[in-house]
Image (cartoon, one colour):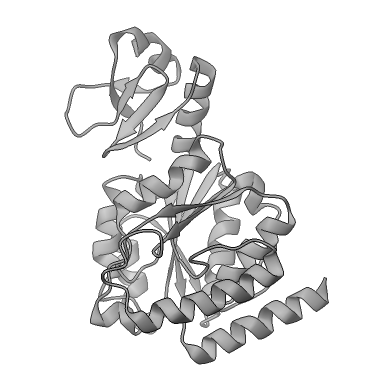
Length: 284
């Protein structure tokens, strides 16, 4: 998050300047109060100055990974919205072998762009992006879809329990939020995949296929992604649960358009996900 300059309570000026943070009075800046940071209606809280420092350090160390395959129609707008909140050097676009202008548009925004020479799938792209973020010493990694179905405000909400140290993996659940735009077939399909994932993870998550999640570096280092395609969403949950990472869900709203409806899982992908999880279980 952009925290290089903030508004704050007067008593915190010296504390913040020792952390290298500039003080301003612009209304659009994050506000730092006694043991909390507030931005766009989301309050990240601690119970002491030490915990406040930890919150600030986590926010400054948050990286966003955006997997993208032939997303020239939406990637520009998605990145413009993310850049309002996150510095470009902490946004990582993984161009997964696109044949359109995805790479060109992403590079024009000044963000980090990593390109796969061939299309490896969602799992491959997330694996590359998460590994790169860890090499950059990320403390928290947010994954964010490139097709325009997520709100940046929801990303800020999903980050909250991980930033505060209350969870290792937070998943943005469309099923716990506003489902008015979510087609019935999507809800039914998701439920089936949620049940399959729960069998392997021994934990039920209401929206296993959500692309919006926040994960601590500690938890990310314990997860070795082996599924290249859509099964990765379930794989992350299964391996996080097996490694005793604390998993929580945060309600979000998904924006469905004719374009984004063409993306994501279907019945065939659901069968592939189940087979992938089964094979992965045997590999262990």
